Amino acid sequence: MKRYRCRWFYPGDSPPLSDISFTISGQQIVAIEAGDAEAIDLGNVAVIPGLINTHTHLEFSSLQKPLEPLRSFCDWIREVIRWKISQPERNHPAISQGLAESIHSGSTLVGEIATRDWRTERDWSEVDFPQQVVMFREFLGLDPSSISASLDLAAEFLSAESPQPCQPAISPHAPYSTHPELIAQLAQLAQAHDVPLAFHLAESPEEIELLRNGTGPFKKMLSDLNIDTGTLFESRQGPIDYLKLIDVSSPVLVIHGNNLTGEELEFLSKRENFSIVYCPRTHAAMQTGQHRWQQMLEHGINVALGTDSRASNPDLSVFKELAFVHSSTPNVPASRLLRLATVNAAQALGQQNSGRLAAGAIASLCVVPLTENSQSDPERHLFDNPNARLGVMQSGEWIVPVK
Image (cartoon, rainbow, N blue to C red):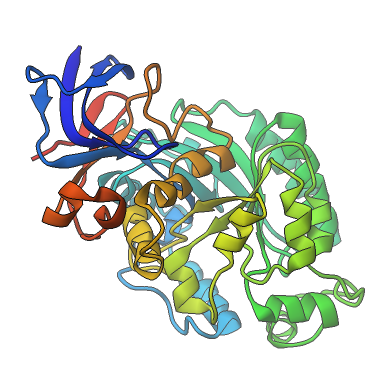
């Protein structure tokens, strides 16, 4: 049993507490009390819940910089396809690199979109696998003849025994890449197994043009790839029609949602199990205009943060995502922003035992060194140094010790 003391303590679901001691026994926090002079003093730091990266693709973690052109979505997808073709089928080093980068930048829980079930492809040690992972097995394909095989593979994936830190989930990719019937059936499968479902939706204006008019850059790209879409995009649909396809009772993550309208926000506001995943730096690099995350919160929609992958982002640091959001919304208190990467993110992934620091909670946390300003006013200055080296504890064990 160890007792620590810190200058500021963020529970995750409320403003910070000053001069707090907290006691850890095994994997749990067992007590949170006023500052104790005999506790191990962590110094001028803020203790926050372990950060949660709600959305990433670890297979791209070996990239040193994002793929270009980020401002031309369909051309960027072409580069993603070319890069994936050039990589080994089992890209374990990149996944290991991504897991290590994630935990060392403070993410104690990761929502991973996996094109392969890499859980069973090697003996993952605790060093490779220090944090919790919700693995969304990704499925795509517009050919109706492949739907049955995809559903069989998804059912097999969900029924397989999984390593303890890794929990299975399902992700039909996106409207432009996945047959509507496959999307609907995978959603029903997620509901039957009570696992989360992730779905990229309303990511770009080009996607909206394809859905509404059956035209535009996406139509040309699919044709260039010799993908026969038949009459799929002739029915003049929109994001609302796809939201209805995935309207199930398990946790549903709508990835990006950059171009959702009032009708779709109204739909989402009536469903507590739906969440929007906002990837701030990827959005800024690839989209024009501001994301409507604040308006979504005002509608009562759960909003969580993700980094997306290194194909569109320079790193996998959720703390840097928070600092980026703070730079454009400096009047939003740090405790409110932290919810996007802790409490809200845990809700999105169906992991309600994560994202909070309280007696009885798992001791997964980060230690943020404070600047001169943040020592006295962390609500305004907690994210002043986005490059700060965080101390990281996972389930009661120091992964990155405090210096």
